[in-house]
Length: 132
Image (cartoon, helix red, strand yellow):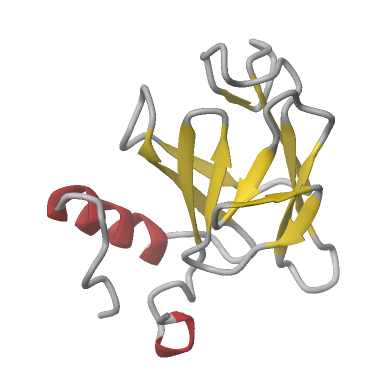
């Protein structure tokens, strides 16, 4: 089922797969793979989701390596695909270990925000087309 070689323990991975299978259409999931709250999951189901150390962020990542306003996840109204954009953070936003200003996301991508590593999952993440 395309989850061999994942660096997350099996039970966390199985839970994530079950959660992905239950995702509403047009939504996606971020799973914290590494960081102070590893295993946490965040649902992306809005046109814009803010991430940062500010308590009013949609996704609140409480660590000094995260800027108060760090990044935003955007959902395309046309394709329902997601992208991530850095909003002037100090330490940058990384996609698959490359520093980015903004980038389209595909299932299985790893987004790094400060010391947090988050895996981006969509309903299609575990299909044959997303296997890398």
